[in-house]
Image 1: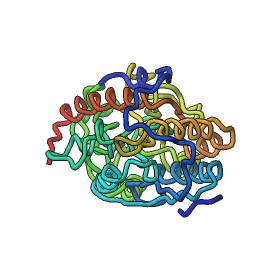
Image 2: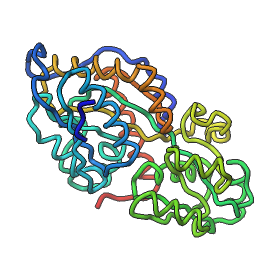
Image 3: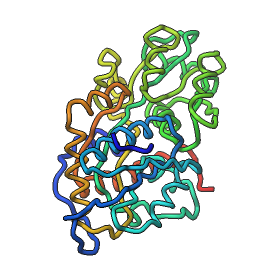
Length: 329
């Protein structure tokens, strides 16, 4: 492998992926790529998005016969790496693995974001969706989302939850739960999901949302934490026995997602060549199996549908951020 290194979400994920409206200067993809490329990963190595980038990027390097460097540029909720990608040459040799945080909530929470997610990037394809899981400490006398809502209503402002950062998917998952259930939970912000998970295990937190990565699911399977529900519209293949939050609160959905983007004005032919090959990789059984092992679900589509998905997600996130009382810094 040549690798160096409150719009209903169900409506979004139920889209049929169709034709591209990608614009850009005309260019030929006939000899593309003829040199190494890099995928900017705007988060630290080792996380769910980094796994996706290295898996798909590594497979694409095999298909293209050119190395793909995964370049981790973490910081500012993904905005440092995203800004770097937005300013790169639009030649197809620098791509961005964007997310709902780096291209959605983070810019929305910044008064003067250094890039416009809708105009500074050329969408290529949605890569995966990552449902979250609602975790509670074993001391909490609940066995379901219904139980949790009833307990929270009987103890307003007394239950707390932790997240790895303001505006990140786990934080917004909890805020959506608060909004739809009409409950009052106290947010405790951490610098990353790992310390929040540690405090949940230690009983300093009552509940938290987290990704469905193997280390987290092992804690549920071993009974160290209770996994009440997942945040996707449908049950996750990684944990089919765990219900969705939406089975108690119809219409609830808040998932992490990762997509592949090029700088704006990247030639249309290059965008479409990347799209065709990455979509084929995401549809390979081995790729799907490896993604599923991390709780991720392949979500391949076309550039036009990723653009539409982002517009809907941006509107949804703005409404959720407004409800939560979060204001741009």
